[in-house]
Image 1 (cartoon, rainbow, N blue to C red):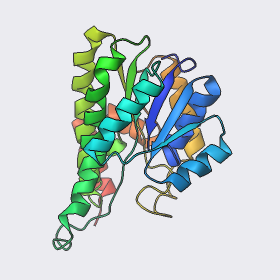
Image 2 (image 1 turned 120 degrees about the vertical axis):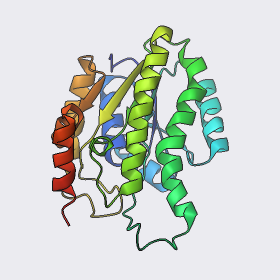
Image 3 (image 1 turned 30 degrees about the horizontal axis):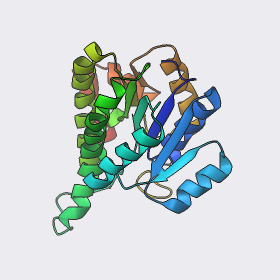
Image 4 (image 1 turned 90 degrees about the horizontal axis):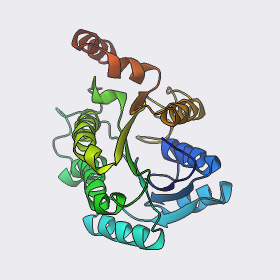
Length: 246
């Protein structure tokens, strides 16, 4: 992938993995529009990295997704890359949290699966006309061996991995590349402040990912997630047992 001459729309770009990727695309010479729900976090990101373009939108809302695509393609007609990075993660005890409002559960499904599928399909007609077009989906090592304490998150990432494979197959004749970033646990605030401090350094992760995308790889992991995406079924079963010890 040529990382230097794109116009990129990146969801969930105000912090964490999304911001790390956005800054690297920006520094490589691309135009980068980051999207998020919180105007204050977007403003903080832009203050730190003035070259970023920010846009507030809630990708959980289908109408806002459609408006985001309309605005982005009208304002930035050279837009040629979509990065579906926005995601949320909730720790859930399914046997004990039955009374939890379904909307809390549904939001995880909507943001992690429905939104990237919808945004991708909305943008395909525009991307068909753009050189170097690509859709990049950010999944997880948990796509391959789930963590039982985040059951919905793990399932959504497995679904997005599956969708990515089908999307790549279907869009290949149209000349739209479909790439997948497979993070391990990364030291960010995913799931809540302080919950991901055990993860790998976000800058080391992002540097490795960008280098491998630039070299033309379609599916890239890092550390434990690289092992997961290349593992056999028996190895994945063992990973599951090791990760989910009672």
